[in-house]
Image (cartoon, rainbow, N blue to C red):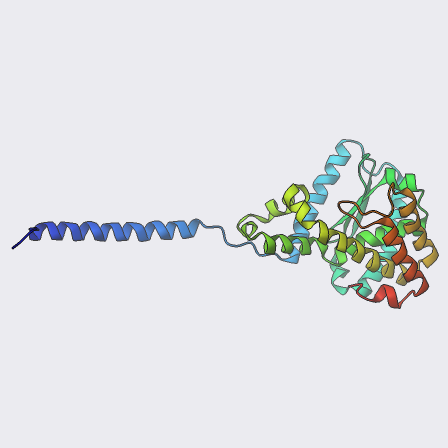
Length: 266
């Protein structure tokens, strides 16, 4: 007994519609794949280029507010120290020889000091004046910031985010670059790594300054002032290790100038 009768013409029609559906689905999938953003892949050149653009933007903002390089004498001291340390960095970190190092100062009240990938430095003048830094102490500050760049800490942060939060691989590098410094969730996740990087920069910066000929006693004085200026020197902050811990480490380097500071410096 025939329960369902399907004319031959109906079968041909259904087959044609099925073929159209398959072709349409395939084209839609191909279009979707074409529109997908390729996974983000980092390169030192890309990171340096991005940092240079952000640095120039920041300098322009400070200049427009009349906060940029207001003390010519201090800027000269900073550039003199940078040139001396840069020459040593070229020996210890050959890849930095092609970098366009630069340093500027800012009188914005909340500015401290930081370095960007590729050797771009900014120093908060108000803090430096408050600390009454000698030339050697200033050199230690600059060497510390240089070490962040020399140890590729920016790249390490970006790679951490891409590893721990894979969704960021589908975002642009510009978005990642901005988020690392402004996204509260990422900043909190990066905090332990950031504190370890500070200790690394202390160590590598100390070694760089000593090898550039700065006296250990003067470099140690920088860390002593770090403790003196801290409200709670025995406690770490959200972004930095405890100042007392950093001073204790520096005292060990002053006692054993080469061995202790050289280990794990890179």
